[in-house]
Length: 191
Figure 1 (spheres, rainbow, N blue to C red):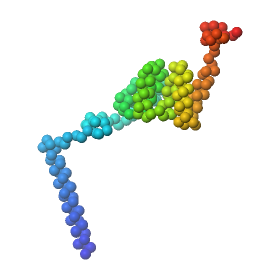
Figure 2 (figure 1 turned 90 degrees about the vertical axis):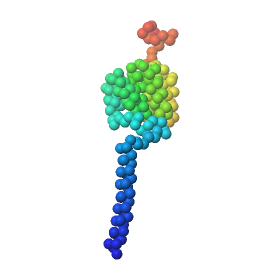
Figure 3 (figure 1 turned 60 degrees about the vertical axis):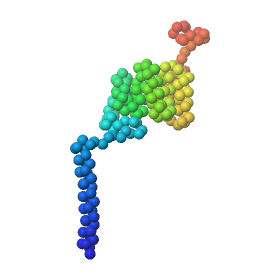
Figure 4 (figure 1 turned 180 degrees about the vertical axis):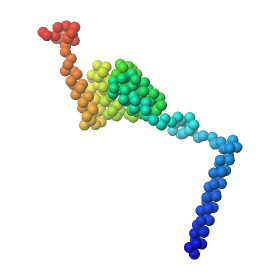
């Protein structure tokens, strides 16, 4: 009895295996005769599968981060530009590109890169902190403070935001003006 049941299960399994092999050979034969299936576009992107380029590494973004922290902002900008071209949905690369532009004094391009990041991620604490720092670099302390305050509303204990506000507060203490409002250096402030 045991062997009969085993043979029956074995025959059913073999039949299924033959069916699967037949289907594989049949579809393989279609491709060899020139009947290739038409690629179906991805409904989310509208791209055909053959049009999509895959990049196995995030090396440009990693190199951008490395060059940024080394203080080589021009090279960092080039690596981040490469990263966003290869992976346009990489928010970190967009923010890195914007921060590199900030350090190069290209605030117009920084604003565009921050805008691209905001479209992908929204107004996050990370983005608001970077934008606030950008405005601080520009000397627009009022807008910088507003960005930092928005970040604090999202995360009241965020240490980066708290440090940025302290930096902003400290920077306003070092502005020296004469009695008539002229910056020290152009007039004598010792009076």
